[in-house]
Amino acid sequence: MHQWYLSYNGQQMGPLDTAAAVAQAAKNPNGHCWRNGFAEWVPIAACAELRSESVAGNVTSPPPPAFSGGQRADVIDYKIYGEDMQFVEIELDPGESAVAEAGAMMYKDAVVNMETVFGDGKASSGGGFMDKLVGAGKRLVTGESLFTTVFSHAGGSGKAKVAFAAPYPGTIVPMTLSNYGGRIICQKDSFLAAARGVSIGLHFQRKVMTALFGGEGFIMQKLEGDGLVFVHAGGTIMERQLAPGERLDVDTGCVVAYTDGVNFDIKSVGSVKSMLFGGEGVFMATLTGPGKVWIQSLPFSRLAGRMMQAAMKPGRDEGSVLGGLGQVLGGDNRF
Image 1 (cartoon, one colour):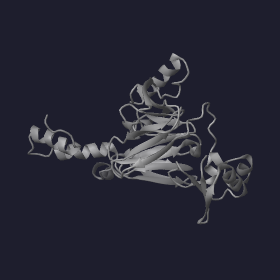
Image 2 (spheres, one colour):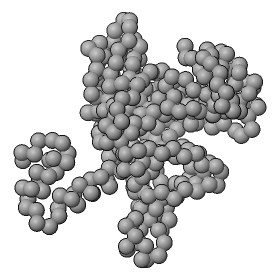
Image 3 (cartoon, rainbow, N blue to C red):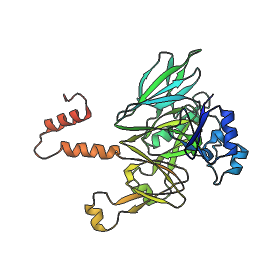
Image 4 (cartoon, rainbow, N blue to C red):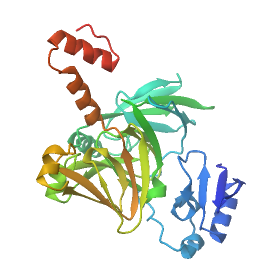
């Protein structure tokens, strides 16, 4: 049972059990709420767990639509460690599972079983071979591995832990999908882990120009469900809530994720001189509200480009270039 905290004009209430929090939210939905597992204070009107018919009838703006999919995701607890090179530790109750990208695991308790499955693992406990094959095919199209790994607490009692590490310096962002209408659109390689029951699908850019020059290409990932997902962003993450019609211009590589109501498009950076000498490329992304967007300060493509640029400076022979790359990557530089 979660303990809730509610905030109205800077005045905090709590801890409250779920029933009391729902009752208070029905009386006054014009505040913010938080519980263990939330990355930030969430508007009460946007929190699916505190919504009821009375709450929805009193809000001044319509809440995001509730996810109408089938299976509910497992409810998991977590803790994020580190500053620049983060990892997330997930706590599982008996029977609960987490799904992660292949190779993301850092450590696990002995009672946690690890199983590699086709697709996103949502149908690992059911569904036919064709369902699993379609799920694997979706991941292949997005450039990910055909497989994901499911980590399940196989013990009879107690809690067990499994941890997943970020692939490069940056920030791990936890998102509860039910607070965002049950769907988040994200770049192809940002997904790290999730509660079992979250679906990892495809999102196609409708406009050809956006598909060709939108930074992440024609295909992005679509995370659907009502559970927790963990998305990794390079550098520092910025979250921005866009009002209806509000537009934000962003470098195409810096877009990490956005909610379903945000319109993603591209536009030219300006004059020919800006395109050639401005250093920002030919196009930039435009994000138009309403909805929430997540932006990263250091895309991996930019990090890799700077590393290669530094390594290939004139006057360096092949050995020094390879050795320099080894030092930058922190690995063994004996090639």
